[in-house]
Image (cartoon, rainbow, N blue to C red; front, side):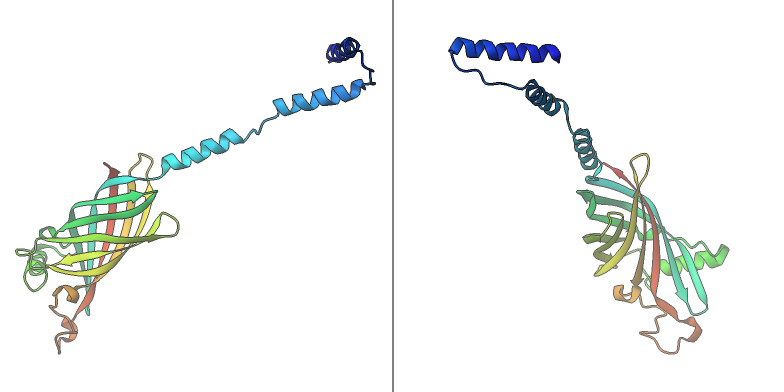
Length: 236
């Protein structure tokens, strides 16, 4: 730095002498302060600027986007005056569509012929399965598939959703709401859990309904049944 001061003073004096002008007194400390300011400006940088940009890029890169194929298990619970029954039903195919990290659409097909009963065994099991597949309930021979198509999705945090969509059972379509929680697994797949409460009478499933039949007593079956759904989604 001392050499820099000396060279600077020498240069100024030589210039003034060559021009024949009057030399003004220049304080070496002023030069030092100026030089230090320049050096400070050149060498001082925001240590967080690159990090912030990288974090923004990483956040953008992790946003879910595109189509996801869905597989999973669907459990049903039906209740009546004297108890309840439960079982499973297969999801034959499904997909979820994400845009900007949030669910934007999707659809599910349910194989009605796959109905099982898990709380009964033997003849009682076969009898109830057969009854559920009959025209008293879901008429599986004529209506083998039920569908749900998402029409809107509401979320406040990107993980808990209220999905609204069109559910079709026995060729009757009505709007239903599905509460869904989504989490991302370490392998990049998604895990989703959902519940749906359905009024079966809307879909012409009226057997044992106190809304349509009198004097059923203890044989009355609740109009609503519940679906508990566990899904895995993998990006296509």
